[in-house]
Length: 386
Image (tube, rainbow, N blue to C red; front, side, top):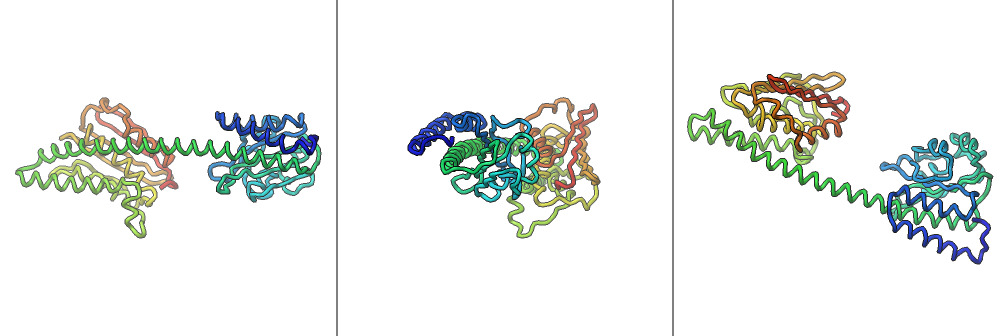
Protein backbone atom coordinates (compact mmCIF):
# COMPACT_ATOMS: atom_id res chain seq x y z
CA UNK A 1 0.00 0.00 0.00
CA UNK A 2 2.88 2.36 0.65
CA UNK A 3 4.56 1.84 -2.72
CA UNK A 4 2.00 3.57 -4.96
CA UNK A 5 3.25 6.71 -6.64
CA UNK A 6 1.86 9.99 -5.22
CA UNK A 7 0.31 10.97 -8.55
CA UNK A 8 -1.93 7.92 -8.48
CA UNK A 9 -3.04 8.18 -4.87
CA UNK A 10 -6.33 10.03 -5.36
CA UNK A 11 -7.54 8.00 -8.33
CA UNK A 12 -6.61 4.70 -6.67
CA UNK A 13 -8.45 5.65 -3.49
CA UNK A 14 -11.52 6.72 -5.44
CA UNK A 15 -11.47 3.46 -7.37
CA UNK A 16 -11.09 1.43 -4.18
CA UNK A 17 -13.86 3.37 -2.44
CA UNK A 18 -16.16 2.89 -5.45
CA UNK A 19 -15.48 -0.86 -5.42
CA UNK A 20 -16.13 -1.09 -1.69
CA UNK A 21 -19.35 0.93 -1.93
CA UNK A 22 -20.48 -1.32 -4.76
CA UNK A 23 -19.88 -4.32 -2.49
CA UNK A 24 -21.79 -2.65 0.35
CA UNK A 25 -24.69 -1.86 -1.99
CA UNK A 26 -24.84 -5.52 -3.07
CA UNK A 27 -25.89 -6.35 0.47
CA UNK A 28 -25.71 -9.72 2.18
CA UNK A 29 -24.65 -10.73 5.66
CA UNK A 30 -22.70 -7.99 7.41
CA UNK A 31 -19.83 -10.35 8.24
CA UNK A 32 -19.48 -11.22 4.54
CA UNK A 33 -19.55 -7.55 3.55
CA UNK A 34 -16.88 -6.62 6.12
CA UNK A 35 -14.70 -9.57 5.15
CA UNK A 36 -14.83 -8.55 1.49
CA UNK A 37 -13.99 -4.94 2.41
CA UNK A 38 -10.91 -6.11 4.33
CA UNK A 39 -9.72 -8.46 1.57
CA UNK A 40 -10.05 -5.64 -0.98
CA UNK A 41 -8.05 -3.23 1.15
CA UNK A 42 -5.39 -5.82 2.10
CA UNK A 43 -4.73 -6.98 -1.46
CA UNK A 44 -2.39 -4.13 -2.59
CA UNK A 45 -0.08 -4.71 0.40
CA UNK A 46 0.63 -8.35 -0.63
CA UNK A 47 0.35 -9.65 2.93
CA UNK A 48 2.18 -6.75 4.56
CA UNK A 49 -0.97 -5.42 6.23
CA UNK A 50 -3.48 -7.47 8.25
CA UNK A 51 -6.77 -5.68 8.84
CA UNK A 52 -9.58 -6.11 11.33
CA UNK A 53 -13.06 -4.70 11.88
CA UNK A 54 -14.55 -4.96 15.36
CA UNK A 55 -18.16 -3.92 16.03
CA UNK A 56 -19.64 -2.60 19.26
CA UNK A 57 -22.22 -4.52 21.26
CA UNK A 58 -25.76 -3.12 21.51
CA UNK A 59 -24.91 -1.39 24.79
CA UNK A 60 -21.66 -0.03 23.35
CA UNK A 61 -19.55 -1.52 26.14
CA UNK A 62 -17.77 -4.30 24.24
CA UNK A 63 -16.16 -4.97 20.87
CA UNK A 64 -16.77 -8.18 18.96
CA UNK A 65 -15.11 -9.58 15.86
CA UNK A 66 -16.78 -8.37 12.71
CA UNK A 67 -14.19 -9.61 10.26
CA UNK A 68 -10.46 -10.30 10.41
CA UNK A 69 -9.80 -12.98 7.77
CA UNK A 70 -6.02 -12.66 7.74
CA UNK A 71 -5.33 -12.48 11.47
CA UNK A 72 -4.66 -15.68 13.45
CA UNK A 73 -7.84 -17.33 14.76
CA UNK A 74 -6.36 -17.61 18.26
CA UNK A 75 -5.68 -13.89 18.35
CA UNK A 76 -9.18 -13.06 17.07
CA UNK A 77 -10.66 -15.24 19.82
CA UNK A 78 -8.57 -13.43 22.44
CA UNK A 79 -9.84 -9.97 21.47
CA UNK A 80 -13.45 -11.04 20.81
CA UNK A 81 -15.56 -9.26 23.46
CA UNK A 82 -12.87 -6.87 24.75
CA UNK A 83 -14.24 -3.93 26.76
CA UNK A 84 -14.52 -0.44 25.33
CA UNK A 85 -12.14 1.29 27.71
CA UNK A 86 -8.85 3.14 28.02
CA UNK A 87 -5.80 0.92 27.89
CA UNK A 88 -7.52 -1.98 26.10
CA UNK A 89 -5.18 -2.13 23.13
CA UNK A 90 -5.58 0.24 20.21
CA UNK A 91 -9.18 -0.76 19.43
CA UNK A 92 -10.69 -0.66 22.91
CA UNK A 93 -9.07 2.71 23.50
CA UNK A 94 -10.11 4.12 20.10
CA UNK A 95 -13.72 3.03 20.65
CA UNK A 96 -13.68 4.63 24.12
CA UNK A 97 -12.14 7.97 23.08
CA UNK A 98 -13.67 8.20 19.61
CA UNK A 99 -10.21 9.14 18.33
CA UNK A 100 -7.53 7.26 16.32
CA UNK A 101 -4.99 5.33 18.37
CA UNK A 102 -1.66 4.69 16.63
CA UNK A 103 0.53 2.11 18.34
CA UNK A 104 3.72 2.19 16.27
CA UNK A 105 5.32 -0.44 18.51
CA UNK A 106 3.08 -2.77 20.49
CA UNK A 107 6.07 -3.89 22.56
CA UNK A 108 6.34 -0.48 24.21
CA UNK A 109 2.89 1.10 23.81
CA UNK A 110 1.15 1.55 27.23
CA UNK A 111 -2.32 0.78 25.82
CA UNK A 112 -1.15 -2.76 25.06
CA UNK A 113 -0.06 -3.76 28.58
CA UNK A 114 -2.76 -6.46 28.95
CA UNK A 115 -2.71 -7.69 25.33
CA UNK A 116 0.96 -7.27 24.45
CA UNK A 117 1.93 -10.88 25.12
CA UNK A 118 -0.61 -12.48 22.80
CA UNK A 119 -0.04 -9.90 20.06
CA UNK A 120 3.73 -10.40 20.10
CA UNK A 121 3.27 -14.18 20.26
CA UNK A 122 1.56 -13.96 16.87
CA UNK A 123 4.17 -11.62 15.42
CA UNK A 124 2.03 -8.48 15.55
CA UNK A 125 4.23 -5.44 16.24
CA UNK A 126 2.17 -2.40 15.20
CA UNK A 127 -1.56 -1.59 15.30
CA UNK A 128 -3.33 1.54 14.12
CA UNK A 129 -6.99 1.72 15.07
CA UNK A 130 -9.62 4.18 13.85
CA UNK A 131 -13.13 4.41 15.37
CA UNK A 132 -16.00 3.73 12.97
CA UNK A 133 -18.56 6.46 13.61
CA UNK A 134 -22.27 6.63 12.77
CA UNK A 135 -23.76 9.75 11.21
CA UNK A 136 -24.82 10.92 14.67
CA UNK A 137 -21.35 10.36 16.15
CA UNK A 138 -22.02 7.04 17.90
CA UNK A 139 -19.14 4.57 17.82
CA UNK A 140 -20.12 1.55 15.72
CA UNK A 141 -16.79 -0.24 15.91
CA UNK A 142 -13.14 0.06 14.93
CA UNK A 143 -11.02 -0.55 11.84
CA UNK A 144 -7.45 -1.60 12.58
CA UNK A 145 -4.28 -2.19 10.57
CA UNK A 146 -1.72 -4.63 11.98
CA UNK A 147 1.89 -5.02 10.85
CA UNK A 148 4.63 -7.50 11.67
CA UNK A 149 7.18 -4.75 12.31
CA UNK A 150 7.05 -1.44 14.17
CA UNK A 151 5.98 1.37 11.85
CA UNK A 152 4.23 4.71 11.62
CA UNK A 153 1.40 5.47 9.18
CA UNK A 154 2.07 7.53 6.09
CA UNK A 155 -0.30 10.16 4.78
CA UNK A 156 -1.64 7.63 2.31
CA UNK A 157 -2.20 5.07 5.08
CA UNK A 158 -4.31 7.58 6.98
CA UNK A 159 -6.33 8.39 3.83
CA UNK A 160 -7.00 4.69 3.23
CA UNK A 161 -8.01 4.12 6.86
CA UNK A 162 -10.36 7.11 6.74
CA UNK A 163 -11.97 5.83 3.53
CA UNK A 164 -12.47 2.33 4.94
CA UNK A 165 -14.04 3.59 8.17
CA UNK A 166 -16.52 5.70 6.16
CA UNK A 167 -17.63 2.79 4.02
CA UNK A 168 -17.66 0.34 6.93
CA UNK A 169 -19.88 2.79 8.83
CA UNK A 170 -22.35 2.76 5.93
CA UNK A 171 -22.45 -1.05 5.95
CA UNK A 172 -22.84 -1.37 9.72
CA UNK A 173 -25.47 1.38 9.99
CA UNK A 174 -27.49 -0.04 7.14
CA UNK A 175 -27.49 -3.50 8.70
CA UNK A 176 -28.42 -2.16 12.14
CA UNK A 177 -31.21 -0.05 10.64
CA UNK A 178 -32.55 -3.13 8.86
CA UNK A 179 -32.43 -5.12 12.11
CA UNK A 180 -34.20 -2.28 13.94
CA UNK A 181 -36.93 -2.20 11.28
CA UNK A 182 -37.36 -5.97 11.48
CA UNK A 183 -37.61 -5.82 15.27
CA UNK A 184 -40.13 -2.98 15.06
CA UNK A 185 -42.22 -4.98 12.59
CA UNK A 186 -42.03 -8.08 14.79
CA UNK A 187 -43.09 -5.98 17.78
CA UNK A 188 -45.97 -4.46 15.79
CA UNK A 189 -47.21 -7.92 14.76
CA UNK A 190 -46.81 -9.18 18.32
CA UNK A 191 -48.81 -6.25 19.69
CA UNK A 192 -51.56 -6.79 17.11
CA UNK A 193 -51.72 -10.48 18.02
CA UNK A 194 -51.82 -9.63 21.71
CA UNK A 195 -54.57 -7.05 21.12
CA UNK A 196 -56.57 -9.54 19.09
CA UNK A 197 -56.01 -12.19 21.76
CA UNK A 198 -57.15 -9.88 24.57
CA UNK A 199 -60.22 -8.61 22.72
CA UNK A 200 -61.37 -12.18 22.01
CA UNK A 201 -60.66 -13.09 25.61
CA UNK A 202 -62.81 -10.21 26.87
CA UNK A 203 -65.84 -11.46 24.92
CA UNK A 204 -65.26 -15.03 26.09
CA UNK A 205 -64.84 -13.88 29.67
CA UNK A 206 -68.01 -11.81 29.57
CA UNK A 207 -69.89 -14.87 28.31
CA UNK A 208 -68.48 -16.91 31.22
CA UNK A 209 -69.35 -14.17 33.72
CA UNK A 210 -72.91 -13.97 32.39
CA UNK A 211 -73.36 -17.72 32.90
CA UNK A 212 -71.72 -17.54 36.32
CA UNK A 213 -74.00 -14.70 37.39
CA UNK A 214 -77.10 -16.47 36.08
CA UNK A 215 -76.40 -19.52 38.26
CA UNK A 216 -76.54 -17.55 41.51
CA UNK A 217 -79.03 -14.75 40.66
CA UNK A 218 -82.44 -14.87 42.35
CA UNK A 219 -83.97 -11.96 40.41
CA UNK A 220 -83.36 -9.73 37.40
CA UNK A 221 -82.09 -6.96 39.69
CA UNK A 222 -79.67 -9.33 41.42
CA UNK A 223 -78.52 -10.61 38.03
CA UNK A 224 -77.85 -7.07 36.76
CA UNK A 225 -76.05 -6.14 39.97
CA UNK A 226 -73.86 -9.24 39.82
CA UNK A 227 -72.94 -8.55 36.20
CA UNK A 228 -72.10 -4.90 36.91
CA UNK A 229 -69.92 -5.90 39.85
CA UNK A 230 -68.04 -8.49 37.85
CA UNK A 231 -67.53 -6.19 34.85
CA UNK A 232 -66.13 -3.52 37.18
CA UNK A 233 -63.79 -6.09 38.77
CA UNK A 234 -62.78 -7.23 35.29
CA UNK A 235 -61.87 -3.67 34.30
CA UNK A 236 -59.84 -3.34 37.50
CA UNK A 237 -58.03 -6.55 36.64
CA UNK A 238 -57.26 -5.26 33.14
CA UNK A 239 -55.73 -2.10 34.58
CA UNK A 240 -53.06 -4.28 36.17
CA UNK A 241 -51.97 -5.71 32.82
CA UNK A 242 -51.78 -2.48 30.83
CA UNK A 243 -48.00 -1.97 30.41
CA UNK A 244 -47.11 1.13 32.38
CA UNK A 245 -50.48 2.89 32.06
CA UNK A 246 -51.77 2.33 35.58
CA UNK A 247 -48.38 3.01 37.16
CA UNK A 248 -47.83 6.14 35.07
CA UNK A 249 -50.81 7.75 36.78
CA UNK A 250 -49.08 7.37 40.15
CA UNK A 251 -46.56 10.11 40.92
CA UNK A 252 -44.48 7.85 43.14
CA UNK A 253 -45.28 4.17 42.42
CA UNK A 254 -44.58 1.77 45.28
CA UNK A 255 -44.30 -1.99 45.74
CA UNK A 256 -47.60 -3.86 45.75
CA UNK A 257 -48.40 -6.98 47.83
CA UNK A 258 -48.69 -10.08 45.67
CA UNK A 259 -51.86 -11.01 47.57
CA UNK A 260 -53.51 -7.76 46.42
CA UNK A 261 -52.52 -8.42 42.81
CA UNK A 262 -53.97 -11.95 42.87
CA UNK A 263 -57.13 -10.81 44.68
CA UNK A 264 -57.89 -8.08 42.15
CA UNK A 265 -57.24 -10.37 39.19
CA UNK A 266 -59.59 -13.05 40.59
CA UNK A 267 -62.27 -10.64 41.86
CA UNK A 268 -64.44 -11.01 38.71
CA UNK A 269 -64.95 -14.69 39.57
CA UNK A 270 -66.24 -14.21 43.12
CA UNK A 271 -69.60 -15.91 43.64
CA UNK A 272 -71.90 -15.19 46.56
CA UNK A 273 -72.19 -18.05 48.98
CA UNK A 274 -69.31 -20.04 47.48
CA UNK A 275 -65.57 -20.11 47.83
CA UNK A 276 -64.56 -20.29 44.19
CA UNK A 277 -60.92 -19.68 44.99
CA UNK A 278 -58.61 -19.56 47.99
CA UNK A 279 -55.33 -17.70 48.49
CA UNK A 280 -52.53 -18.99 50.68
CA UNK A 281 -49.33 -17.06 51.14
CA UNK A 282 -47.56 -14.40 53.13
CA UNK A 283 -48.98 -10.87 53.06
CA UNK A 284 -45.50 -9.34 52.95
CA UNK A 285 -44.43 -10.66 49.53
CA UNK A 286 -44.11 -7.45 47.52
CA UNK A 287 -43.89 -6.89 43.75
CA UNK A 288 -41.99 -3.85 42.45
CA UNK A 289 -43.64 -1.42 39.98
CA UNK A 290 -41.33 -2.58 37.19
CA UNK A 291 -42.35 -6.24 37.68
CA UNK A 292 -46.07 -5.88 38.36
CA UNK A 293 -47.08 -5.76 34.69
CA UNK A 294 -45.37 -9.07 33.91
CA UNK A 295 -46.67 -10.82 37.05
CA UNK A 296 -50.20 -9.52 36.44
CA UNK A 297 -50.11 -10.56 32.80
CA UNK A 298 -49.15 -14.14 33.68
CA UNK A 299 -51.80 -14.49 36.41
CA UNK A 300 -54.43 -12.81 34.24
CA UNK A 301 -53.78 -15.29 31.42
CA UNK A 302 -54.03 -18.21 33.85
CA UNK A 303 -57.31 -16.84 35.25
CA UNK A 304 -58.68 -16.29 31.75
CA UNK A 305 -57.87 -19.87 30.75
CA UNK A 306 -59.40 -21.16 33.98
CA UNK A 307 -62.60 -19.19 33.28
CA UNK A 308 -62.77 -20.34 29.65
CA UNK A 309 -61.80 -23.98 30.08
CA UNK A 310 -61.18 -24.83 33.71
CA UNK A 311 -62.17 -24.52 37.33
CA UNK A 312 -63.30 -20.88 37.34
CA UNK A 313 -65.86 -21.52 34.61
CA UNK A 314 -67.25 -24.75 36.05
CA UNK A 315 -69.95 -24.88 38.76
CA UNK A 316 -67.96 -27.37 40.85
CA UNK A 317 -64.54 -25.91 40.09
CA UNK A 318 -62.16 -24.70 42.82
CA UNK A 319 -58.89 -22.80 42.56
CA UNK A 320 -56.07 -22.55 45.10
CA UNK A 321 -53.29 -19.99 44.53
CA UNK A 322 -50.42 -20.28 46.99
CA UNK A 323 -46.96 -18.73 47.16
CA UNK A 324 -43.79 -18.82 49.21
CA UNK A 325 -40.63 -16.76 49.15
CA UNK A 326 -37.03 -17.84 49.75
CA UNK A 327 -34.30 -17.62 47.10
CA UNK A 328 -37.08 -17.91 44.55
CA UNK A 329 -40.70 -16.79 44.54
CA UNK A 330 -42.69 -20.01 44.13
CA UNK A 331 -46.30 -19.61 42.94
CA UNK A 332 -48.55 -22.67 42.70
CA UNK A 333 -51.80 -22.51 40.75
CA UNK A 334 -54.01 -25.55 41.48
CA UNK A 335 -57.39 -26.18 39.83
CA UNK A 336 -59.79 -28.90 40.90
CA UNK A 337 -63.27 -29.93 39.80
CA UNK A 338 -63.13 -28.41 36.31
CA UNK A 339 -63.41 -30.05 32.88
CA UNK A 340 -61.09 -32.86 31.81
CA UNK A 341 -57.61 -31.29 31.99
CA UNK A 342 -56.30 -33.13 28.92
CA UNK A 343 -58.48 -30.90 26.74
CA UNK A 344 -56.41 -27.91 27.84
CA UNK A 345 -53.06 -29.12 26.52
CA UNK A 346 -52.93 -26.99 23.35
CA UNK A 347 -50.47 -24.09 23.32
CA UNK A 348 -52.18 -20.99 21.94
CA UNK A 349 -50.96 -17.40 21.90
CA UNK A 350 -51.88 -16.93 25.57
CA UNK A 351 -49.67 -19.86 26.60
CA UNK A 352 -46.80 -18.51 24.52
CA UNK A 353 -47.31 -15.12 26.17
CA UNK A 354 -47.06 -16.72 29.62
CA UNK A 355 -43.88 -18.64 28.76
CA UNK A 356 -42.26 -15.59 27.12
CA UNK A 357 -42.95 -13.49 30.21
CA UNK A 358 -41.87 -16.06 32.82
CA UNK A 359 -38.78 -17.31 30.98
CA UNK A 360 -37.83 -14.21 28.99
CA UNK A 361 -38.65 -11.26 31.23
CA UNK A 362 -38.06 -12.91 34.60
CA UNK A 363 -35.62 -15.73 33.68
CA UNK A 364 -37.87 -18.06 35.61
CA UNK A 365 -39.52 -21.44 35.01
CA UNK A 366 -43.11 -22.61 34.60
CA UNK A 367 -44.22 -26.23 34.74
CA UNK A 368 -47.72 -27.53 33.86
CA UNK A 369 -48.93 -30.81 35.32
CA UNK A 370 -52.24 -32.10 33.98
CA UNK A 371 -53.57 -34.70 36.41
CA UNK A 372 -56.80 -36.75 36.32
CA UNK A 373 -58.09 -34.69 39.26
CA UNK A 374 -57.07 -31.27 37.94
CA UNK A 375 -54.28 -28.98 36.86
CA UNK A 376 -51.20 -27.83 38.81
CA UNK A 377 -48.96 -25.05 37.56
CA UNK A 378 -45.66 -24.27 39.28
CA UNK A 379 -44.00 -20.90 38.62
CA UNK A 380 -40.50 -20.15 39.93
CA UNK A 381 -39.19 -16.58 39.69
CA UNK A 382 -35.79 -15.28 40.83
CA UNK A 383 -36.26 -12.78 43.67
CA UNK A 384 -33.82 -10.36 42.07
CA UNK A 385 -36.11 -9.98 39.05
CA UNK A 386 -39.04 -8.87 41.23
